[in-house]
Image (cartoon, rainbow, N blue to C red):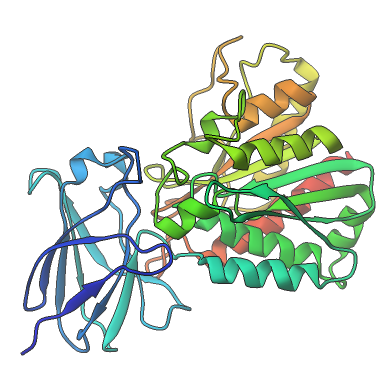
Length: 376
């Protein structure tokens, strides 16, 4: 039989083919440009119908987060709409750390990815469809390194300035699925939570803060290898125009509440990281942050507060990160929402793991929690 073929020359594609023997392939992930980061993969396999594939991605001990590979299962799709999970194992001793994906597709072509991709084409559809809704303003806050627009969708008539932004780290595609869920809710004229939120808040929503990295199939950086979530103290037009554009727009409106939406490679839970350790920390500000997390934990079993990142000590917050910078800069409640690349081990889903669908549902609960938080 003919051997399979593998290709990643498309939006957010990333894989290097080292060898193919029948239905077995040895692969490697391309590093982010001008960076040592690598973890995101996205590729298609042709000639695969009814054939047992063995796909070995090698050299992963040197990846950005080696702890992300144990217990991880790769995402696959045959129609690029539904993304399931397939048999996957990791051997840290094999060929510099090897992830082995085994799958027998029904269709001739099958796509594999680190997480269900969110394409730039879908991003532009989301922006266009949302901008066409009543009361929505689309603004181009600035341009990326490679000249792509930093889209911001604003809506609502209330006094509270709420900023939601995602994909500073472009490989964390669950973050833009979350954004799709948030925008679907907020523009739904029949949704009572959305109606009440629009009365109380002015939302500014950036679905993709790093379009260049998204197109290039990067994990964590923009087109010149810069981690945008380490630029918020001193963004520049040369290194991080994406952050500069967003932060300037925030300075113009002020910020009362901010959520930076991400994904975590290793921790199989949904959690939130805050701004403990900022120089201007107050008990009132900290209590408001804690109260939001408590509301969200009560509203959805997909969120928990027992597991997450360690907190910074007094005065030791990293102000180059957006959550800390915004909490310090505006005295607001800011937070980083993290969703898993793996699954939510509190509520595992054998078919899909953590998924686009659950990301979108979580967005609705985050916004409903915001309404409750504002009412208290």
